[in-house]
Image (cartoon, rainbow, N blue to C red; front, side):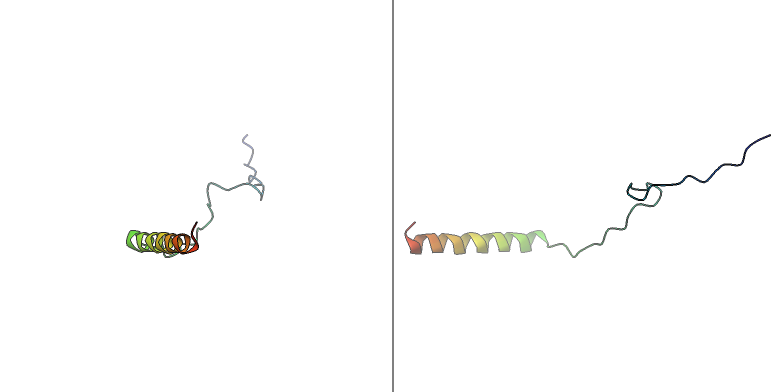
Length: 54
């Protein structure tokens, strides 16, 4: 005689590998946009340092 399987009670604070959480996808910046942003920040900080005499 077999016993019916009891449903597994999952703890809510643990990640359920059978139902992983959905990750919201943002629109990632392209490499070109990141390079422009970094160069702009470096240029502004360099100009400010030179103007301030640091």
